[in-house]
Length: 266
Image (cartoon, rainbow, N blue to C red; front, side, top):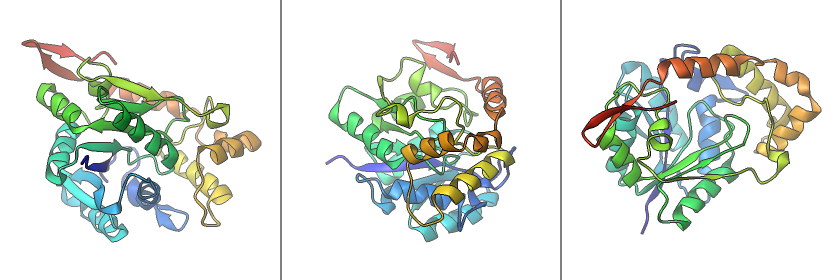
């Protein structure tokens, strides 16, 4: 029987917004919002949801919150997320893992399930990614065999920025994508990931509009809100350009194949 889990990379020593996973968003910390959405997947139980953090003492506070919420924790390399994931999957004996970035507290549960179901239905696939949703609402699913392959070949130990490029841009894995169900799940400029103080204010405004009554909302409700109230987009407008410039600068990744070192084209 295939053992399915979830991996969420998080550490508190963020350069741009330190401690962001524990910052309050409405009545709960950011990480708890995300955990609740992952727990809601029909393929997962809380004890198979693993927050992958570091061995640094600075992450002790994160561990306490995550365990109180009902999820598991794996502590590993500070900068090598590939290694952290590989060892976490070995430790918890996972065959398939959903991966959701810890910066994405409003990631959509329905698309988590779609990514997992596509991967489980097609044995030839190594990785399935959502594609075309507003940035920060998607997720990925991969087999442990894919993580083992990337772990074996990767040579750059500082890959906390851009690690997914090892899975999608090296030819080491067979990938596929899940597209949005319709135009009501797309938005050309919405930025739904947490990197800067402006992003936190944006998330707060969205949560106040959609989540203050305790109901879980998805991509359809978010897109409809932003079309109805486009002024919300001004809160964190322009940050995506800064984000992608930083990613391009830091995601210098290399891997070994056929006895040679190759650089990942980002």
